[in-house]
Image (cartoon, rainbow, N blue to C red; front, side):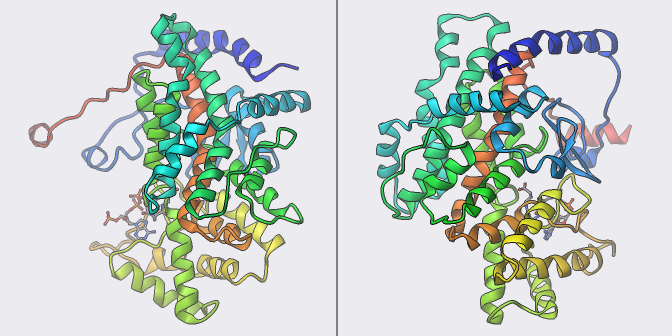
Length: 432
Ligand code: CMX
């Protein structure tokens, strides 16, 4: 049995040795090239950073520490965090110790409630969440140690402490945002003898007589935890953290990126689109109605939310996992059925009918991503305020961002500073 802190302490010298040897022997080996299109195109496909917590294979989807996601879908989220950080699954005792560690850090400071209550009533839940995390920065152990003077090789120690504090307090803050923003009553206190995922479900205050919503929450928190290092939220968190800004700054910054409609906010947009179709057609639409409505959306210049991906080229396994959950727990729910029907119809349209000026499919990946299905499941259990959905995503994604931050401090990753070039430089260079 090793606590997360002990396990990681053992790993640090091994990681440093391995990376040191790699850099020494192969430091000059080229691993990527960049085209003009990539430089203007969001650096898509450029290999320019390291992330050891997970990889996203275009033809397989998310693989966490060597485990394809659907093979570890039964792990609880805190087990996933342990795995992300250390590369091993915790045993029962290790899991229990981590749960106690999180519970010990779960109390939401009173000043957070004051800040959240003082915010304008129409604030987006993501703004409330990110503000709360930022306001808690005054608690950062990393900053306190840094201000006193600390050796570079110790940076990861207070970073891990800050990570545990953020993860411990996050369900309470996130659920509090829900209750305050939507007038659901006072925040509910964390239950120390309950796991992290079930706690979050309980803190939201929705009825869950059979415990199925808690099951969904564990799955949801597992599925959204990480998606390698180059996505907007992880990369932003990485960049901000690389300046030695502490975890409160870095995670809040990453989550501001998650709040964009092309990234995490797509789950709110997605359910909105599904509910619009149900309303428009007075129930679960036929495939023909869906087909026409999807084309109408595309032709009006909007995206079909929940479809397409920057890296994936197959149906996102996270979508597959959510649909399997829906099939088991709510096969007759019209919202779930509409998501299912959309899955039958939209990929074909994106692949064959939505063409660019060159007559080729515009979209590189016509398949559903994680955001296409999750909202329907949440909606089924009464979580109907869909602008809140990205907050759920955030609670989960904090695990990935934080484990990446800790590892980066442990291996001494340098401050991020890629070279930008001007359009004039590109023109001169291509002319040669
Ligand atoms: N509907 C309409 N158009 C789409 C589309 C969709 N679902 N997916 C891609 N496209 C368009 C792009 O906007 C782009 O158009 P332009 O050439 O006019 O700029 C073109 O197809 C090519 O895009 P791509 O290379 O296939 O995809 P990108 O890597 O540029 O973008 C993503 C990826 C996810 C932003 C994009 O597929 C999209 O906007 N999807 C809808 C929003 C969404 O579901 N986001 C959630 C992603 C998962 C997450 O991060 O949470």
